[in-house]
Image (cartoon, rainbow, N blue to C red; front, side):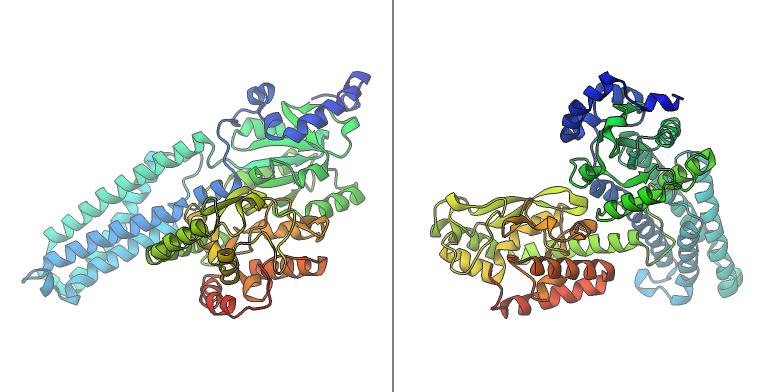
Length: 518
């Protein structure tokens, strides 16, 4: 490990500060330089998955369980139908109960024994053996109830076939799950991305251990004291000052920020924590950065759960999965019902003024990811404002005749159903604001300290703020603060039922809103 003196720059290093600051502006390019690629082990610049995409990968465990549920109950229902003397229609409840108990026992044990964890160093054969044991216990439960209900008349051949089919289906499924998880790990889809704040010896120790573990990507280091910082630590580039992290191109790819500052420097820790708290990304503080045990404990906590946990009905992962299922199901239903309306609106937009029917705009999504949002064009094509540098006012001469109707009813937002199905947006959430959007002469994001907290969840087609009257342009700092506060209130309260309520009241609220100018 380099000595303390190696962190104080030579004249040549000081002259290099300016060049490194320029590289920091390029962000992802600096993170993927040749040296870093060679030294950081598991990090692959050709596998760039942002935190939203890795979050979707984490939730695949719920799909695994869903398939297991379908296969297990299909086998149980099929076996129960075979017991009826007159065919499936004549199946009695007393004949079906043992198979139902067996299926239920299998599914409960699979979840309670964490057989959906797929740990990094997990032995696939041992995992399949545990699955087989669980199915055996389910079969024992079914057989026991069968003997109680039927005695000597228990149809053992049917029980045997049910057990064999269930065993084959679930072992095959979990073999596929194990292969898929191994493939996602190898591609980096399940590897958490972290950045380190503090170009210190503590950061060096943390990065060295992360490289040895090979289950974390360290994307970069940030430090306010650029003149005293090395250009790289263990091959990981020092990308800039801490404030640069707030709007850095790497931000959407960061899952966690690790503060590698000596806790004895209380004022500095407090100041950095305050400045970084505005980001939607979680912050981890090394309580005792000099202790290898504590560093390893932090790294283990960051890397140990690449897949979502299933042990809590109220967990953030389960809420995210429920929200995604809600978006997909309702989004598909909406498109199936509204496609004639979408075609008609598109035709009317084309006939009303020259130009395309759709308008694309880059906006901020989850964790400040840049997404392309689709809308029906409501302005004259030559006056389109992709950056929202000038917000819409009453009688705005840029808005077309059809555009006024579409804006007043929010029908111009309907193409965002495509963004919802792609997973970039949700049906309900904070409205996505244009990148660089201004309120007056000031960028809106700079008017409220907690503005970035809006990005802790996917943006939505509608939202709590919209039904509470905060929709359309924001012309004052007070309007920005109210919008952000309503968005944060929603994020803290978000639930499946609240989303349904917002969707149900959106149409009457928006049609009855005559005050908001859009």
